[in-house]
Image (cartoon, rainbow, N blue to C red; front, top):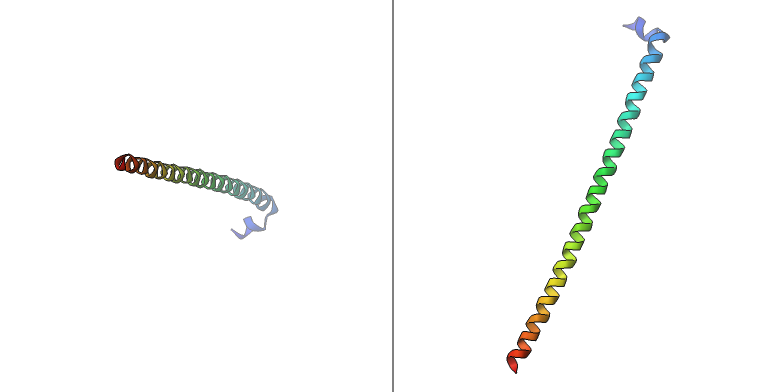
Length: 74
């Protein structure tokens, strides 16, 4: 085993292959992380839109109840 590691004809190609594997792995992890962050951002945007719609519905409900109360007094 030591003779293989001391032989530059074996070490250089092996190091090149390992370096390529590491680079591909790092790029893949980076792309996966970017997709994950994008998915979280899209979920947060949808959540904020949902909360806004709920508040609009609550305001509309309160307005209708107020109109109903005014009609009931007359």
